Length: 505
Image 1: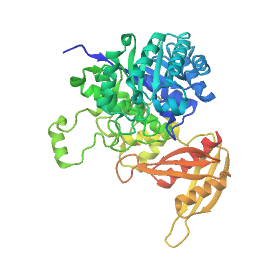
Image 2 (image 1 turned 135 degrees about the vertical axis):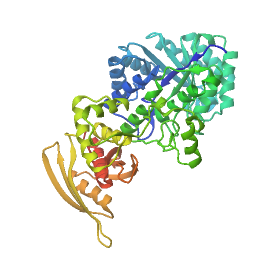
Image 3 (image 1 turned 135 degrees about the horizontal axis):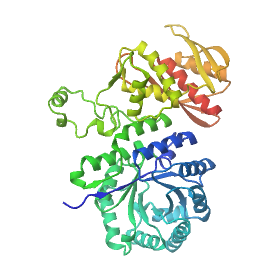
Image 4 (image 1 turned 30 degrees about the vertical axis):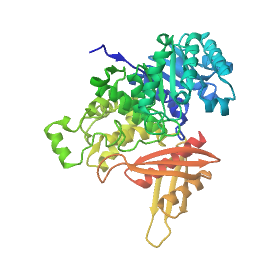
């Protein structure tokens, strides 16, 4: 058997992933996720698109100048301003990469760029050359490569490598390719581009047809050395190649692919949950690797097989992706040290103050619930760190809801602002949740519109913690909020206040 080949994992959660509607992050959230990605072991982190906005520039600069442990990358179009701005953001990084791109497909040339083939090649060479004048690690992407004529794609790739690109990324920008087609395209480049040995071939697949992971695997089978992906597969439209899925496919079927990565797979679930808590975008229950049902077994035949031999119905161990062996972890008599230890196992780094806050809430929950599950711990930590419970802004003091058949529901709400001013209001609504929205509007003075409302059980049992995710619109901008409690109405109020605090921050 030939020597195992290592595949570079290029994470673009903070760039392409953040472009997913509803997934924008502030600087503090990006810094937290960036550290989690470093702990996960990604080889390259695309921290943003510096020219896109002052916020993106600041995030790339702050992440790349204050963190270590990976190569930090910034995206740029093939224009002087983009490339100069990218280098300005990356110049203090321990290891930096500039990623330049230019569309090459016929449809993009005609309708978007209005440029011919010769102009495209010239612009690509200029862009790569300028980027190379700043640093040695340059990646070039012929955008929409999967729909680009092979003859022209070969010309562009050869020219970019000659100009100094050390990585050539082949994007399936609109998720149009199929695995067989993608594999043939990568093989074609290796066979036809004379200087292909001077660059690493990368693959960047979108998931519009649900084939992003399959296409990425086909590409590395044909010789590609880098996969571009995102945590939870987030990204524009239907998203990107899912990092956790493609990594575990390579690990679980190493016998078939003979490929490996540097990813610490036990950090997959904690990183996935961190991203969910930051963005409010939950993964579906049956999502491969990180979904709530990924290692759940309900069918009797499956349960019987699992009891006799785990591998009858599980091809991966839950511990290998960061799940505890058992869901039941702590009880009402557990101490702060035990909670802190479990938090670290679940991927959270809490300082003393945060741990004390979570511990206080844990004790309150333990008095309400007979059993404390792993999901409860996640919910408590995420609410304290990323939720609306904060000394700054609006927070809940008390609420009283009355909803009786045949009568108009009423919500009496008491809030505090910055831990000082206490305001009380009463509002009616079509239901208790609607009344809560109206009461928040009255107290805060903000006219908000609910665009999305989701409620789900964070754990098991009739006394499970309820998690509410809301999206509210204020003056044309959508803000996310998240709240957790064993009481759904309380979860909703906390989620609304979380969103309101984002408006006023």
